[in-house]
Image (tube, rainbow, N blue to C red; front, top):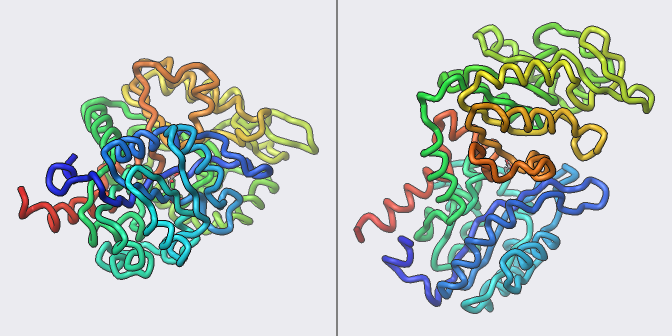
Length: 407
Ligand code: 3PG
């Protein structure tokens, strides 16, 4: 709206940063949940309806991981959800991408390939530094404006998030706007106890988030699952079994033990599971801590019971990341039970990150009035911890630079 008011959108070319980073099937490379694509389709359509040529860009996964893929399938889904033809180009900043951008006409949509194919995109640096990157200096001159709709990546200080706002008049997109409005309304600091249910595979990020949550006093209880739980169990001196220790070691997570121990010493209120569903020679077993022989795949029934009791006391529950390997249908139970218990409690529930969306849909709980499904994962948790998000700071700097003399 601000861009339209002060400069005019009709006939312009807009670079739109979206976050359609989605869970990907490791074998088929199919997109397992398209809720982020659906969400951003609204922004794309609105900009097209207002007469802009729209070039969308997003990251997907991280180099080296099995979900680091090209965005061809994303383009097909964006086309389906916008109802508009979406051209895809398997290039980000090279001559082919630049030609395609130059020839794009008002009312047309182009999706660039995975931004993390550009090595600069992995670097975290200041907006000023990224404004000088090759990524930004090559693309910025081809556009009139930059719109950041990627709330879910607002915690990354990467060129596609913080560099362009320094070079182009910029604004927040509809998804970003909706998230910030909803979360500021929801997040009443008086609503306590606040319980965070944290799982999933991004252990480095989760540890960083726990440090922020704890030092800002933003959390009362943490119910850990997944690899984060295993790390804290080792930090507490609990035997998680040889096989699981080896998994932590292979993923380079044992180096995080000193940080986990420091948090425990400072009184981080974290609960860890008391039992797990494990795989022992291809058989599924339920094993109690102290006697674990198999590979941990999900939390067990006693843990579900204990976590459900704790959630009953909560006023606000924030959930991120699955409790088990939910890509395998045999290990969805723990996540299903926790999601159900949270939504059926008396608390307001904020769910972040894409992985739990399929569980919520499968349980038919998506429309519940006490539930906000956020597009954000790490960004959501840092926002709730009261941290400044680089993506938002860059938009504020851009407004100062390009809008302040106009208002
Ligand atoms: C997310 O899913 O949290 C965002 O897309 C950010 O992805 P990243 O953790 O790989 O930066």
